[in-house]
Length: 234
Ligand SMILES: Nc1ncnc2c1ncn2[C@@H]1O[C@H](COP(=O)(O)OP(=O)(O)O)[C@@H](O)[C@H]1O
Ligand SMILES: [Mg+2]
Image (cartoon, rainbow, N blue to C red; front, top):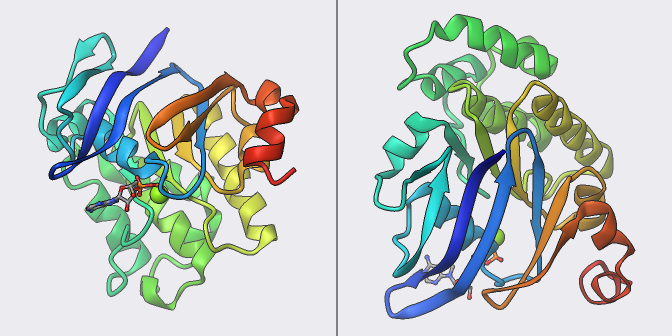
């Protein structure tokens, strides 16, 4: 079942078009990964899906509805959550306060959700009274993802969740992403640790200069000689 679909999206900043007709699809319960060189438009695609940028052409379909003209808050309310590449937390607040902020627009009893988030990220339970700025990079990324999970989204958009982390923490974050997925949440992530990300993705897209270049299962992309040579460092 299709959950999220971007169809022929053209979008950019001011007069500059960055995505020249990009399409992609995430099915329910899937992990989908977008890779590609710096500046390809990966983050721009995420922003367009969340409604932070307005496409000049194309449609975003979510859960069977055309949401292209909806405001970001409405998209969030429908179950799309987004963890941007940077500035995705409140450093001067504690872990617990950050999670509470995430639940701000939710109707559900947020304490139940918080328990589930602590179940996925036991680290956060231990550090819940600490100011986030005192935490390690890995823990801060967990706070950012945990905050998005507070809204119990149908899909979570993760922009380079493993960026800047030591290899051990990269693995830990990816393990947690799989755990989140197993709980029923679809994942759309942009990643530079492309091999690892494709290894756990049901499907992957290679985006180059604002266009779709390759689309296949994660495994098939890993085995594709051209993809390996050009986009996975040989
Ligand atoms: N806020 C912005 N204003 C103008 N141009 C931008 C802005 N953000 C990104 N760009 C440009 O859009 C292109 C794609 O950027 P981005 O989507 O961030 O790429 P990626 O995430 O694949 O590295 C780049 O050329 C970048 O310079
Ligand atoms: Mg980016």
